[in-house]
Structures are given as structure tokens and as C-alpha cells.
Length: 447
Image (cartoon, rainbow, N blue to C red; front, top):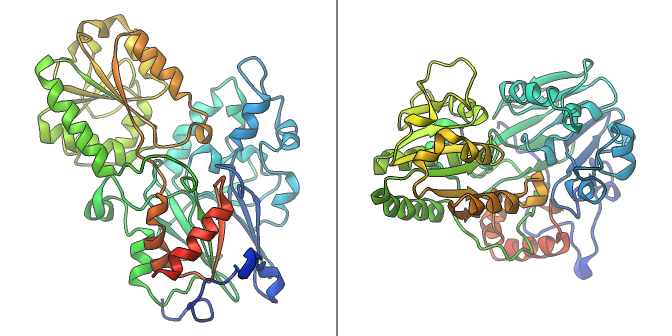
């Protein structure tokens, strides 16, 4: 940056006066109007609208799965967009009025939402067009409401260019999360600078050097190296704020996997790993541990196989299980019968039950172990972790649940605030917005 962005000195946390009174930016004069229309008191379903002069930007437009679960089940399904809007599951039509651009931070549905819901012509900026096209194919072949995820013909869909300021004054900054790729958005407005974090964690499964090599400079590194960037308003997620979730780090997970794998080696039975189909960082960690401990590596999921195509030189050879990965690829394909002991098998949460049901896999099931990753709250992605765990137990598979979050932990807020140094904080993606504001204020005061 050649000039100092934002305004004012950052010697106190603005936006929160004594007694907890919030100062709204629209009350301050000619600054941008920031509206959190959804997600301020919920985990997921973010919709942030910024009005700045003749420009209107939207950051995320996710599904409220917490509301969806109240009205729908296997027997009761949505009738269409109008009904979902009326119930508050998806954004209202008028929220999109005059939108110059809609920016999606990552491809989890509580942020991506239903692109079919966007009512008029505009530009939509997605983290990855290739990921979108792959997912779009599955959505369009679905017989459920997932058909509505894909966008309509009049939308101009563009791919986000990381670390480049675009025509709207937005710089997408890479962040670590359980969906790849994921971004925070730094917006340089007429009179103030706004940072929207999306979902992010401080510590990556890749480590700092590998993250830089494979993904790029992350949010906190970028801001640390550009101290002239002054953030006036920070819109920050707070998924884990107010939660009693144990703060398990990526290093903790790696060490637990190593211990389980070493103890499993003598049994000559495979280890199964379930992961979200976009969790690139966790998948890469498993490959690294497989190489380190001398395990063969197999992938039994087309989505995960395509995710790992992004690694031109993986740490270990990847074998694809042909019954689960049917698309053409240069990588080696094997049958289930060929999988032996001392092997890692990567599959998705939704495919592990089919894998275990397959008669061809039963000879390898002498004493298998499964590691079930749980990076997100169940409500956020509508995944039924307990149902999957019940199936594993019923089929004689010992399983462990790894709850390394895809979000930062509250104790890391001090570090975040010391780097960002905002004047004002607006919570989102949390059930405890007041607590998050208080912790942010205290964290800032301690730096």
C-alpha cells in the first residue's frame, strides 16, 4: 500500500462506550453504512451489506441451518425459494437491492447459501470456479433443495483473486479454515476501511511455511507486514466464543493421529479418516503423517480426490479407489480388494458408511479404526456426526472424534486484536455477540 488507509489513531477500541452502548457507523456522519442482516446472533447464515456512496457490497449470503432444522426433515422438504425466504432460512429478496457485488468467503453452505436466491443481475465473486463447477454438477443432479444452490443464468460469476485489490476496493486475504479456499475481505471505502473475517482459525494444519507455499500469505501475516493498513471496523466471527469446546490445536490432532497410527500398525488393519470434502489442510496433514510413518494412502471419495489434485507433488503416493472415484484421472486406481493393512483411507462423512457396507472391503476389516473429524458445529453444515458414529459402532469399527475447530479459539483473540488494531468491532457468526465484544475490548486493552 502506498498510502495509509482508514482514519484516526487506534489508541482505544471505538464503537463501545461505557455502559455497553454501541456507536453505529451511520450515526457518525459520512461513513459507510454496515448492516449485519443475518448472522449476528447465530452460527452461520451470514449476510453483511455495506452501503458506501453509490456502491453496495454483500459479504456472504448463507443458509440458516438452525432455522431450517425447525421446519424441515426427511419427510417435510422445502417447496421453493419463496417459502425459504418467508421462514428466514435464506436472505430476503430486498436485501440484494442495488448490490454491486456479492463476495463469498468460502463454500460452506452457511456462507455460500443458495445462489438461485439472488434475484437480479449482479457479480458474484467465488473462492474457486473449479470447486464451484464440481459442486454444481452434484447439486444439479440432486432431487432435493440442493438444486437451488447453483446460480441462475443472469449472474456473472467470477473467481476471487487473492491479495489483489479489485474494482470495488476489496482485497481477498487467504485464511485457514476447514473449507478450501477461504478468504477474509478487506474493503477500502471512501472514508473508512472495513475487514470482514469470514470463518477462520489462527493455526493451520499446514504450518506457516507450507501454508505460504500452497495457499499464500494469510490474513494476520498480511496485516502484520502492512502496518499502514488501518482497520476502522472489524466484522469478526466468534463461533467458539461462549462455547465450552476444548481448544484442540492442529498440532494436538497430528500427535493424536500419530499415536493411534503407531498402535494400529501391529494389527495390519486400515485406518479410516473422514473429512469434509473441502478440508484441504486436514487432508494434506494426513498425507504427511502417512509418509512419516510408512502407511500407504488411498482415497475413496471423488470430491476429496479432486481436492488433492491441487497438490502437484503430494508427500506420498495417492491411490484412488475405483468404485468411489470414477472420473478420468492420471492417478493410479485400485479396487477395494487390493487395500491391505498399514494403510490410510480418506473418505467423506457421507461415503464412509457405503465404504464399510461394501462386501469387497470386509476382508480388510479385521480391526479397523476410524478417525472422524468434526471441525464445524453440527448445525453449521447440517452434518449428523452422531448418526455416522452410530454406524461405525454397529459395524464394529472403533472410532475417535477429532474436534479440532475450523475457527479460532477465544484465548487467541488477544493476538488477533493486536494485529488488526480496529477502532470498532462488530460480532457475527456467534451465539454470544455481547461476550465477543467484551473480550475484544479487554484483549485490545491488554496489548
